[in-house]
Length: 302
Image (tube, rainbow, N blue to C red; front, side):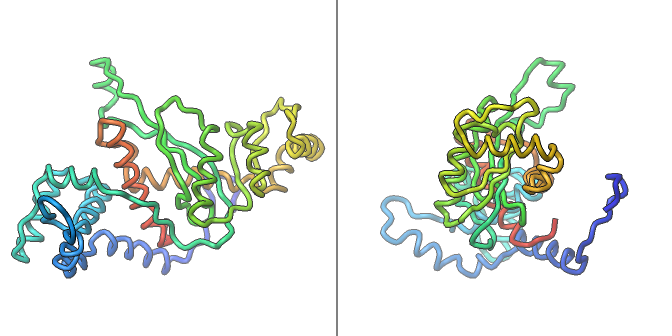
C-alpha cells in the first residue's frame, strides 16, 4: 500500500465483489414471500383473538428493505405495493398500516456467519433526527440534535455483533461491557476487544479481563496510573518502553478503525438520519436498519 492515502493500492477479487453486490439487489427485490402469503397468514391468525391479520409479516419486512435501502416514503411504498400486489389480484395496505406494522415489528439482530471466536471493536456514531439543511436550521433556529448508535462490530465482516441506541449525551464507555455481554449471549466468544481512548476506564479494563477478553484500548498520552488494574499498568510500561506506534502495531490496535468502516458503510447504505420523532420509534427504526445492514453483510461486497 502506498504512503499517500490518495495513492493507496487495494487488492480485491472484483468478480466476487460484483457478484456480492448483485446478491444484495436480489435480497432487496426478493418476492418469494408472495408464494407463502396464505400459509403465513394462516399461521399468524391461528389462535389469534380479535380481528385477524390481513397482511403477512414478510410483506412488511419487504417494505422495510425497500424503504430504507432506496429512501422511499411510506406513501410511495403504498403506491409501489399497489403495482406489485395488484398484478396478483391482492389489495395493498395503505401507508398508515405500513408505518404501524413496520413500527410494531421486532427486528432481531441477524449476524452473518462468523468464526466462533471473534475479535471485536467498540465505537459509536451520531444519527441525525432530521434531514433539515443547515440553512433552515440557522434561519429558524431549530435544532433537533441527534441520537447515538453504539455498536460492537466485527473487524472481519464489518457487521454489528451488538448495538444500543441512546441520547446524544450518553457516554460511550458506559455501554462497553453491556455490548460485550449482549454479543456473548448470542453465542459469540470474543477473545480481543479494541477501543479508542473513550474506553480507557478502569471498569472496562477489569471487566474485559474478567471475561477472558484481551483489551486493546488506546491509552491517553499522559496516562501513567493503572488505577488498580495490573494489566493496564503492564500496558502503560510496555507502551513507554516500545513507543506508541510500536505498541499499537504489536497489539494490532490498527484494526480498531474497522469500526469506523462499519458506521461509514451503514450511513452510506441506509442514511445518516432517521424519520421517526419519538425515541421509541427511533429505536425501532434503527433496529430495522441494523437488521437490514447485517443481512447485506452476509455478502462481503463493500
